[in-house]
Amino acid sequence: MKRRAGGSLQSLRRTNEDQILDLLICQGPLHRAELARRAGVSRTTASTIVSELIARDLVTETDEEPRDDVDGRAGNRLLINPRAAVVAGMNHTFDGVWVHLSDLASGEVASSGIALEPDAGPADRIEAGISVLQRLLDASELDTGRVLGVGVGVPGPVHRDTGVVGVSLPGQPWSHVNAAEEFERALGLPVMVENNTRLEGVAEARWGAGRGVANLLYFGLSSGIGSALVLDGRLYRGAVGAAGELGHVSVNIDGPACPCGNRGCLVLHAGLPAVLAALRSVFGTGAELDGMLSRTAAGDPAGEKVLARVGTVVGQVLAGLCNLLNPERVVVGGELSRAGEALLTPMRSAVRESALPLVRDVALVPAELGHGARIGALGGAALVLSETPDLAAALNHLSAKGITA
Ligand SMILES: [Zn+2]
Image (tube, helix red, strand yellow):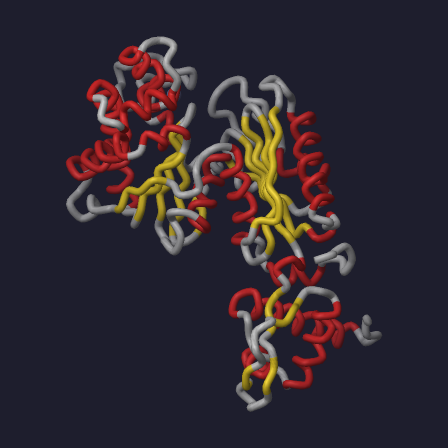
């Protein structure tokens, strides 16, 4: 179907195709005449391009009743074929990897994960991630050539320019690894690498409790404590990708020593190991987290007291962040968010008491997507959808083979 034409004609055609794909991604479904009008081309040009894009499975027609277009002709509306391409998220945690495939309409295509030994090195982890990705593509009858990009999550801060994973704590498998380069080489696909917790925040911002919010603060309360700052609709990374490393903010300068070298870090008071220890001092050494949280949610005063202390110390740090950043909404996720209102209510009280009056009425809500490695993988896919510089051009450059939708 390729037209033999001079370079400038070919490039004009490619530009028109990119523009039409972009209009359908951002504003579709649209009728042909409306599409032509918005693209600033003739109806004939638009129709020719659309026919080729339909033949390449990049564009499809709605199956609704044909309606009159702006030029009075009846016809179906056009939309991007959601399965024309997929984006992938691959989230590497300490004990496993989860891969999520999403179509261009944000629908889940496939999602799955496997456990890994905690002492596995980066090469084994990359290989495991690729095997899960390949299995999901095979099961969905998709060719690798249909993957627009992969958003990879790793523990630790990721340098925004170099892709090298920094050191926040000793012993992390990815420290000093150029993760962006390694994944790109192994996958042969465009890759974006970001910190796990930041990706959870991106997932909540696009698909969860932060939908439609331009200035969002996500708190991930698990073994570590991290956050994601979505400012003016974009993930904020800071100078070296470390923006959001809240776990090592000191809340007590005379407190116990932390492996990071600081004293009295927030994570020593509100990280999962500390909270488990505090709850077990009340419920008994063998008690499991779920059981203790259920008893607390049912009104156990001793459990409530432990979580009130945790919520208050996290809330005080949050109050400082509200003064600094003035977010519209704060989303609380991670394993500890299962504590629900027993944790959120004291957090809200601490913000109301400690933050400036102008910023203290911020909405503080639980995460909607749940917790675990899958959420970071959702965020990886969301990152590709929101940060691929020109999604339409990337889609247009994909090989035309491999789709079976
Ligand atoms: Zn620390």
